[in-house]
Image (cartoon, rainbow, N blue to C red; front, side, top):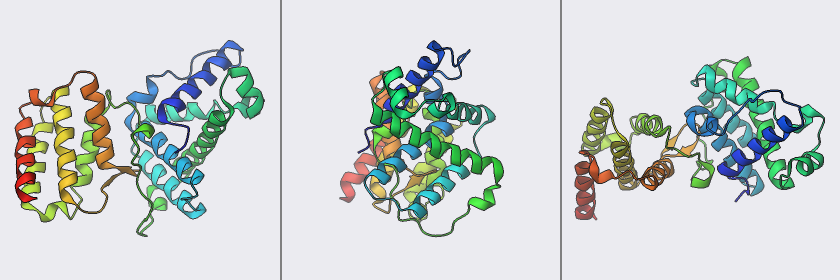
Length: 274
């Protein structure tokens, strides 16, 4: 596994930012820690690039695969808000060479472990390529009809804290499941997804969101099909598990939601069908 998890990426970039500010290279703040956890499209794009770096380190990604994955992230970011795109562009401005620093000097001056900084710079260069593709192309350019054999991100440490964006992420998972032929071959799962859709139309609370995450985890495990992935390449079950873990850690209780009964129904059905 790469030493650069999502939390360590945030730590490295905020250290660089503070270091530049202290040295007078930046005259105002350009990022804050909350940016990394409040912007769903930007966050998942960064997560996907962490996954690419990890796969490259393990020799599990060819150059053509890397280009394919970068195009998927670029396509994904065409749906991002202007604010999210501006945030990602500001990250590019933190590359040390823009301030006349190489990795060794930046590592020493900013008190950042050198390999961590090297991986961060690799990610920023990758991000720069992706943003260039987004700004210079139309979505049709990114289309690739080949069946990808690249596994989707399935390590929670590469994902952001989901507390502030959980509802949006649940919506992304739900939209992905709507296109799953395996799920829609089962009338019962159609019913389950319909109930979830109705719930999402209301003003849902944190207990509802964690209950929905639990239900979706159960649906995904019950399907027993190929891996279901949320764009730009995140394993849906891993994403729901991260939401569940993050929200229960801050006190959310799925049993406090009225939709928890659907989870109980699903669980009972799974036991019977085993």
